[in-house]
Image (cartoon, rainbow, N blue to C red):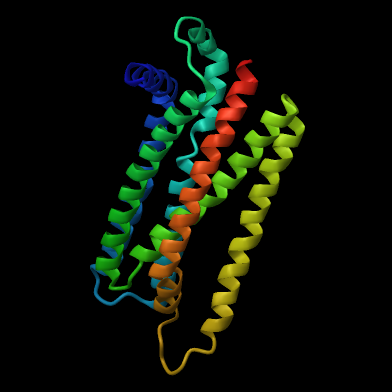
Length: 245
């Protein structure tokens, strides 16, 4: 089993090598640019409210970008078909469950690496502008992973049940994207409406960051993500068996 998994990991990483390099360079470049911008702005002394708002929303964008860049499985599926890698099943028999297990091992590794980069970025920004952005960065990253995993589960469930009905899969992907686009502005709008009732001279950005980055939100989102990853692995195994049967 260990040799089989090593072979399958080599297979997946070979398919994803170019994609992962490009995505990692893109994320690292964006985070480096944001870090340089934040440190330069904070080097001149006190940071204005407008600059602080820009840093906060730039941090949210960085978290969402990191989450979306972890979703490399679409590229792996396309490369799989183009390279004819399914022929290896003739000489290296493996089940859909084995393939799904390896796919999610690699997916989890990507999540951890990108998550560590975002955590480091959040700590640098928090230290530079003296506002706790780290929790908000982590929670937005976890939330993005949850939304993408829901979309992946729906897409693969449709493929497992309906085979090659590409139109329905595209509709499910669109529905997931619309859900994210509707939910995020609504959630931020609710926080902004609540922020108007802050007493005294409380800082609104600190208020938003502390609420979005609350520890109970981290625990809840992480628990939901773990459940979605487990369900996603099961659905992916069914979809692989259906596709390769």
